[in-house]
Picture (cartoon, rainbow, N blue to C red):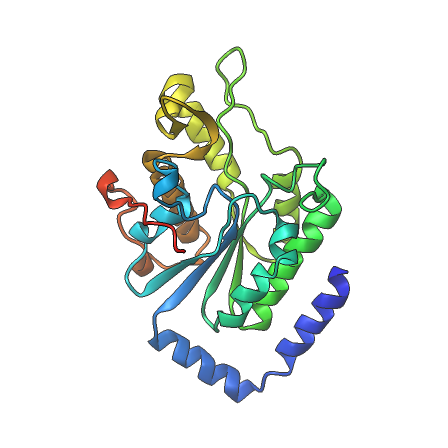
Length: 264
Protein backbone atom coordinates (compact mmCIF):
# COMPACT_ATOMS: atom_id res chain seq x y z
CA UNK A 1 0.00 0.00 0.00
CA UNK A 2 2.50 2.59 1.19
CA UNK A 3 5.12 1.72 -1.40
CA UNK A 4 2.82 2.54 -4.31
CA UNK A 5 1.68 5.84 -2.83
CA UNK A 6 5.22 6.66 -1.89
CA UNK A 7 6.45 6.14 -5.43
CA UNK A 8 3.72 8.44 -6.72
CA UNK A 9 4.57 11.12 -4.16
CA UNK A 10 8.27 11.03 -4.87
CA UNK A 11 7.66 11.11 -8.62
CA UNK A 12 5.48 14.19 -8.20
CA UNK A 13 8.19 15.91 -6.21
CA UNK A 14 10.85 15.07 -8.78
CA UNK A 15 8.66 16.55 -11.52
CA UNK A 16 8.69 20.06 -9.99
CA UNK A 17 10.99 22.27 -12.13
CA UNK A 18 14.06 23.54 -10.31
CA UNK A 19 13.30 27.20 -11.04
CA UNK A 20 9.77 26.81 -9.70
CA UNK A 21 11.03 25.13 -6.56
CA UNK A 22 13.50 27.96 -5.94
CA UNK A 23 10.79 30.56 -6.52
CA UNK A 24 8.45 28.73 -4.13
CA UNK A 25 11.15 28.64 -1.45
CA UNK A 26 11.81 32.37 -1.82
CA UNK A 27 8.12 33.16 -1.52
CA UNK A 28 7.79 30.90 1.50
CA UNK A 29 10.54 32.87 3.24
CA UNK A 30 8.60 36.10 2.69
CA UNK A 31 5.25 34.96 4.05
CA UNK A 32 3.81 33.68 7.27
CA UNK A 33 4.48 29.96 7.36
CA UNK A 34 2.16 27.36 8.84
CA UNK A 35 2.77 24.49 11.22
CA UNK A 36 0.09 21.85 10.60
CA UNK A 37 -0.73 19.35 13.35
CA UNK A 38 -2.04 15.88 12.46
CA UNK A 39 -2.94 14.02 15.62
CA UNK A 40 -5.49 12.84 18.16
CA UNK A 41 -7.37 14.22 21.16
CA UNK A 42 -4.24 14.93 23.19
CA UNK A 43 -3.38 17.70 20.71
CA UNK A 44 -6.80 18.69 19.41
CA UNK A 45 -8.71 21.96 19.74
CA UNK A 46 -11.30 21.73 22.52
CA UNK A 47 -14.50 23.72 22.74
CA UNK A 48 -16.57 25.23 25.53
CA UNK A 49 -18.51 22.05 26.24
CA UNK A 50 -15.26 20.17 26.95
CA UNK A 51 -13.55 22.72 29.25
CA UNK A 52 -11.24 22.44 31.11
CA UNK A 53 -9.93 19.71 28.79
CA UNK A 54 -7.19 21.23 26.65
CA UNK A 55 -5.16 19.87 23.74
CA UNK A 56 -1.48 20.79 23.67
CA UNK A 57 -1.97 22.14 20.15
CA UNK A 58 -4.07 24.92 21.69
CA UNK A 59 -1.03 26.13 23.66
CA UNK A 60 1.65 25.71 21.00
CA UNK A 61 1.06 29.15 19.40
CA UNK A 62 2.15 30.81 22.65
CA UNK A 63 5.67 29.53 22.00
CA UNK A 64 5.95 30.57 18.33
CA UNK A 65 6.55 34.01 16.86
CA UNK A 66 3.79 35.65 14.84
CA UNK A 67 5.50 34.64 11.59
CA UNK A 68 4.30 31.10 12.31
CA UNK A 69 0.62 30.14 12.19
CA UNK A 70 -0.64 26.89 13.72
CA UNK A 71 -3.27 24.91 11.81
CA UNK A 72 -4.45 22.32 14.31
CA UNK A 73 -6.10 19.46 12.40
CA UNK A 74 -5.84 16.98 15.28
CA UNK A 75 -9.19 15.31 16.04
CA UNK A 76 -10.42 13.27 18.99
CA UNK A 77 -10.28 9.51 18.58
CA UNK A 78 -8.22 9.34 15.41
CA UNK A 79 -5.33 7.04 14.65
CA UNK A 80 -2.72 7.35 11.93
CA UNK A 81 -4.97 5.08 9.88
CA UNK A 82 -8.43 6.58 10.46
CA UNK A 83 -7.09 10.11 9.96
CA UNK A 84 -5.97 9.09 6.47
CA UNK A 85 -9.03 6.99 5.70
CA UNK A 86 -11.34 9.90 6.55
CA UNK A 87 -9.52 12.17 4.09
CA UNK A 88 -8.03 14.40 6.78
CA UNK A 89 -4.46 14.05 5.52
CA UNK A 90 -5.67 14.93 2.02
CA UNK A 91 -7.31 18.05 3.45
CA UNK A 92 -3.99 19.15 4.96
CA UNK A 93 -2.06 18.41 1.79
CA UNK A 94 -4.52 20.41 -0.29
CA UNK A 95 -3.44 23.56 1.56
CA UNK A 96 0.11 22.92 2.69
CA UNK A 97 2.79 24.96 0.92
CA UNK A 98 6.57 24.92 0.48
CA UNK A 99 8.27 25.92 3.72
CA UNK A 100 5.41 24.74 5.94
CA UNK A 101 5.72 22.01 8.59
CA UNK A 102 3.57 18.93 9.12
CA UNK A 103 3.88 17.72 12.72
CA UNK A 104 2.50 14.18 13.17
CA UNK A 105 1.64 12.60 16.55
CA UNK A 106 -0.33 9.36 16.71
CA UNK A 107 -0.42 6.13 18.73
CA UNK A 108 -3.10 6.47 21.43
CA UNK A 109 -5.80 5.12 19.12
CA UNK A 110 -3.54 3.04 16.89
CA UNK A 111 -3.20 0.82 19.97
CA UNK A 112 -6.90 -0.15 20.01
CA UNK A 113 -6.62 -3.66 18.61
CA UNK A 114 -10.35 -4.35 18.97
CA UNK A 115 -11.20 -1.59 16.48
CA UNK A 116 -10.17 -2.44 12.90
CA UNK A 117 -10.97 1.09 11.71
CA UNK A 118 -8.21 2.49 13.90
CA UNK A 119 -5.78 -0.26 14.83
CA UNK A 120 -2.30 -0.42 13.34
CA UNK A 121 0.54 -2.77 14.19
CA UNK A 122 3.64 -0.86 15.35
CA UNK A 123 6.28 -2.32 13.05
CA UNK A 124 4.15 -2.69 9.91
CA UNK A 125 0.95 -0.75 9.29
CA UNK A 126 1.74 2.04 11.78
CA UNK A 127 4.98 2.78 9.96
CA UNK A 128 3.23 2.39 6.58
CA UNK A 129 0.66 5.04 7.46
CA UNK A 130 3.25 7.39 8.94
CA UNK A 131 5.14 7.21 5.64
CA UNK A 132 2.06 8.64 3.91
CA UNK A 133 2.37 11.78 6.03
CA UNK A 134 6.12 12.00 5.45
CA UNK A 135 5.90 11.48 1.69
CA UNK A 136 2.84 13.71 1.33
CA UNK A 137 4.52 16.64 3.06
CA UNK A 138 7.71 16.24 1.06
CA UNK A 139 5.81 16.00 -2.22
CA UNK A 140 4.40 19.47 -1.52
CA UNK A 141 7.72 21.01 -0.53
CA UNK A 142 6.84 20.99 3.17
CA UNK A 143 8.85 19.42 5.98
CA UNK A 144 7.49 16.45 7.93
CA UNK A 145 8.17 16.18 11.66
CA UNK A 146 7.35 13.10 13.74
CA UNK A 147 6.48 13.37 17.44
CA UNK A 148 6.30 10.30 19.64
CA UNK A 149 3.00 10.15 21.56
CA UNK A 150 2.75 12.07 24.80
CA UNK A 151 2.52 9.74 27.77
CA UNK A 152 -0.54 9.06 29.88
CA UNK A 153 -0.52 9.52 33.63
CA UNK A 154 0.23 6.06 35.00
CA UNK A 155 2.33 5.11 38.03
CA UNK A 156 3.26 1.77 39.55
CA UNK A 157 2.90 0.88 43.24
CA UNK A 158 6.30 2.40 43.97
CA UNK A 159 5.39 5.76 42.44
CA UNK A 160 7.33 5.30 39.21
CA UNK A 161 5.86 6.76 36.03
CA UNK A 162 5.44 3.88 33.58
CA UNK A 163 5.22 3.93 29.77
CA UNK A 164 1.89 3.00 28.19
CA UNK A 165 2.50 3.00 24.44
CA UNK A 166 4.25 -0.32 23.89
CA UNK A 167 6.35 -0.50 20.74
CA UNK A 168 4.79 2.50 19.02
CA UNK A 169 7.39 5.09 20.16
CA UNK A 170 10.26 2.76 19.18
CA UNK A 171 8.66 2.12 15.80
CA UNK A 172 8.34 5.85 15.16
CA UNK A 173 11.93 6.48 16.24
CA UNK A 174 13.14 3.78 13.86
CA UNK A 175 11.09 5.19 10.99
CA UNK A 176 12.37 8.72 11.65
CA UNK A 177 15.95 7.48 11.46
CA UNK A 178 15.27 5.45 8.31
CA UNK A 179 13.53 8.33 6.55
CA UNK A 180 15.80 11.03 7.99
CA UNK A 181 12.87 12.87 9.50
CA UNK A 182 13.18 15.15 12.52
CA UNK A 183 11.90 13.40 15.65
CA UNK A 184 10.44 15.12 18.70
CA UNK A 185 10.67 12.55 21.49
CA UNK A 186 7.66 13.77 23.45
CA UNK A 187 7.01 10.30 24.88
CA UNK A 188 10.36 10.17 26.66
CA UNK A 189 10.23 13.80 27.77
CA UNK A 190 6.67 13.67 29.09
CA UNK A 191 7.38 10.42 30.96
CA UNK A 192 10.37 12.11 32.61
CA UNK A 193 8.23 15.15 33.48
CA UNK A 194 5.49 13.02 35.07
CA UNK A 195 8.18 11.21 37.06
CA UNK A 196 9.62 14.51 38.27
CA UNK A 197 6.20 15.83 39.29
CA UNK A 198 5.08 12.62 41.00
CA UNK A 199 1.75 10.94 41.62
CA UNK A 200 -0.13 13.80 43.23
CA UNK A 201 1.25 16.82 41.37
CA UNK A 202 0.54 15.27 37.98
CA UNK A 203 -3.18 15.34 38.78
CA UNK A 204 -3.02 19.12 38.35
CA UNK A 205 -1.78 18.66 34.78
CA UNK A 206 -4.44 16.21 33.62
CA UNK A 207 -8.19 16.63 33.24
CA UNK A 208 -9.08 15.75 36.80
CA UNK A 209 -12.35 17.38 37.84
CA UNK A 210 -15.02 16.81 40.46
CA UNK A 211 -16.73 14.34 38.13
CA UNK A 212 -13.86 12.92 36.08
CA UNK A 213 -10.43 11.40 36.65
CA UNK A 214 -8.89 11.52 33.19
CA UNK A 215 -5.30 10.31 32.95
CA UNK A 216 -4.97 10.83 29.19
CA UNK A 217 -6.14 14.36 28.41
CA UNK A 218 -4.80 17.63 29.78
CA UNK A 219 -6.10 20.72 31.51
CA UNK A 220 -4.49 24.13 30.76
CA UNK A 221 -1.33 23.60 32.86
CA UNK A 222 -0.75 20.20 31.28
CA UNK A 223 -1.36 21.40 27.74
CA UNK A 224 1.03 24.31 28.25
CA UNK A 225 3.69 21.99 29.71
CA UNK A 226 3.49 19.58 26.78
CA UNK A 227 3.43 22.39 24.21
CA UNK A 228 6.58 23.74 25.85
CA UNK A 229 8.21 20.32 25.36
CA UNK A 230 7.19 20.43 21.70
CA UNK A 231 8.63 23.91 21.29
CA UNK A 232 11.90 22.94 22.92
CA UNK A 233 12.18 19.86 20.71
CA UNK A 234 11.48 21.89 17.57
CA UNK A 235 14.40 24.09 18.60
CA UNK A 236 16.70 21.22 19.65
CA UNK A 237 16.20 19.39 16.36
CA UNK A 238 16.75 22.64 14.43
CA UNK A 239 13.38 22.36 12.77
CA UNK A 240 12.91 25.90 14.05
CA UNK A 241 15.57 28.50 14.68
CA UNK A 242 15.95 30.51 17.91
CA UNK A 243 14.32 33.46 16.14
CA UNK A 244 11.15 31.35 15.61
CA UNK A 245 10.39 30.49 19.25
CA UNK A 246 9.50 32.58 22.29
CA UNK A 247 8.65 32.14 25.99
CA UNK A 248 10.21 28.68 26.29
CA UNK A 249 11.46 29.62 29.76
CA UNK A 250 8.60 31.90 30.80
CA UNK A 251 5.35 31.27 32.62
CA UNK A 252 2.27 31.29 30.40
CA UNK A 253 -0.87 32.76 32.02
CA UNK A 254 -3.59 30.13 32.24
CA UNK A 255 -6.06 32.82 31.17
CA UNK A 256 -4.57 32.68 27.69
CA UNK A 257 -6.26 29.31 27.18
CA UNK A 258 -9.80 29.79 25.88
CA UNK A 259 -12.45 27.38 24.66
CA UNK A 260 -14.53 28.82 21.80
CA UNK A 261 -18.10 27.70 21.11
CA UNK A 262 -18.12 24.73 18.78
CA UNK A 263 -18.82 25.73 15.19
CA UNK A 264 -22.26 24.63 14.02
